[in-house]
Amino acid sequence: MIEIVAEKREEAAAREALLDLCLPERFEKASERIREDRLPAEGLALAAHGPDGRLAATVRLWHVSAGPARPALLLGPLAVHPWFRDRGLGGQMMRAALERAEALGHDAVLLVGDAPYYARFGFSAQKTGGLWMPGPFDPARLLGLELKPGALDGARGLISPTGLPAEKPSLDALIAATAKRSA
Image (cartoon, rainbow, N blue to C red; front, side, top):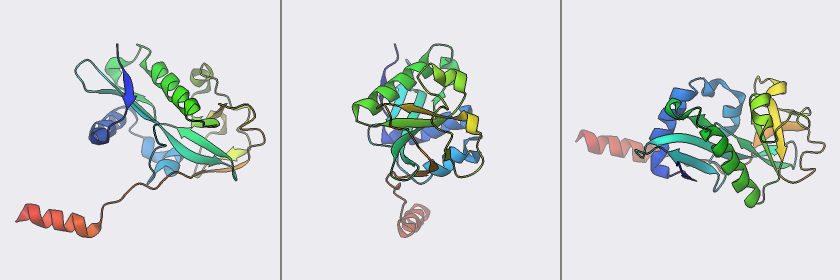
């Protein structure tokens, strides 16, 4: 059995490698404009490991506004290593992420994805028609799930990031570290 746990900071390289393998086009997506230079929501970056300890799946949720003054989360990307597909791990990751989001008191989750796949988790485009994203996106793939009834009623406007900015290394520190290695 694979256990779903909080993602560890030291897994960043493995996570990026898994995303590169599964979703090489992710940097071209409007969702990435919302995620870039932000930290995922506290407690909502999840990982699953295979029997050998290597990263098998990842999912993260991000703080956003679903229009003015309407907090929500943006889910994604969800990635499962090809060796672990067709075992239900993607569904397990989704359920774990949504259960944790609800337990933490969040109201709604948005994502861009395949409606038939995500409908089984309760997502639909029913209340996302008044929302848009920065950059090109397919409105039929913008889906929402209310964790609290009515959370997306009347949602209208630009989906924008509200989460904490990611720390960026100091340029001086990077130069000093490079100089130290060269010496």
